[in-house]
Image (cartoon, rainbow, N blue to C red; front, top):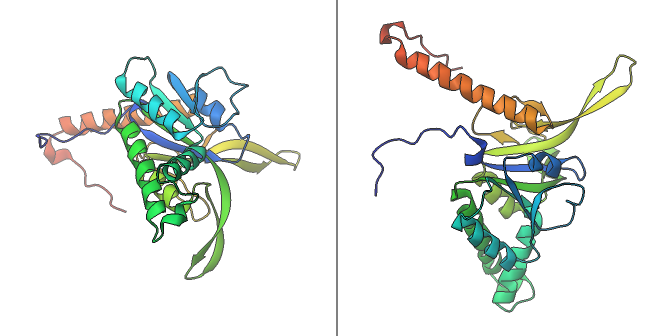
Length: 256
């Protein structure tokens, strides 16, 4: 059925999909563990220091079964965390190879194996993203040499294969890069703070479709949530005021 009204922007993190990536041990899983009623679909060990709801995922069939149970809605979880999406993709590749009785995706020729894997991977992620829960995908980071018209430079990106990375970054609402920000202390020595970078840069992948987040924010979930919700509330108040003002008092918007 065709819609009769426009959708409204989502104002809750539980309605959004995010990619959180960065170097090992920086605190990605810890950050995600503070999301509301989070369920971890753990595709690798590494949660032993955290008190979380964890469903071990050892193969793609495990992930499909977990997705089916999540979709039934007979639970109290509000956020689904795949930790890590890199391992989930490898499990998807193994699943497709086993299904078609090949040892490697290239064995089917003409890129067919890669296409089958990416289609299956995208199918399942899309299904999860459409469910009424927040979805957070965790990935590691690495440096890649990028060729441009002006030369070669290094860019930090998630450790997924290129096509899978493009599928994920195209799907999510937030791309949050976990990094160390260096400042000089009063004693002249360098000081490091764990941060999240949220805006696009030539040097790393990041993005915020909501437009609510500052360019850099401490890697601390309560601080992140406060900034996200404050901006959402401010936008709602601003929109209500604008709607109540007579048209003659409206100011032209700056399009710069």
